[in-house]
Picture 1 (tube, rainbow, N blue to C red):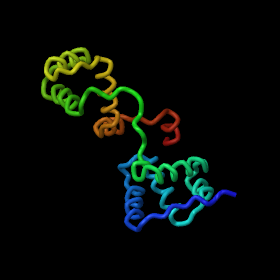
Picture 2: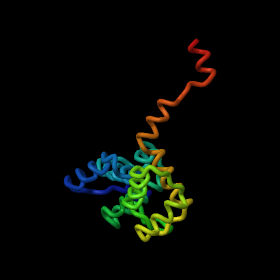
Picture 3: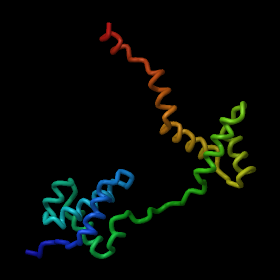
Picture 4: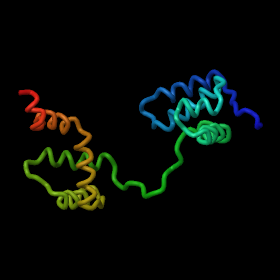
Length: 161
């Protein structure tokens, strides 16, 4: 039977892992990796941790080995493939300000030309439309608007009567 996989960490490292584990701004996978290390340092076995976190035992082992080899860098996800975005948050904020400031309405093609002319940034009208739509779905104004305009279904209205 192979030797038990156990890490030894200092109290300072343990406190740092606890902070990472309870930080809601971090990705969930990073928080769970920190939890795996904390539990392992407290004496939990790989199988106990896997059952607790609902991961495969190999995933727990991989997390522990990654931390042993890479240190704190082993907690974070590796960079993903794909192209980096070309626009900045300030560019989209500029478009929103233009739409709010002026009385006229813009379509996505006009916004694309405006970005190219004013900010030297080329974004397709389709991409602008997707970005603005996603921001509107996540915004509070959109949620509040949905709450006020929501009408109960016929079935629910019948139950109320």
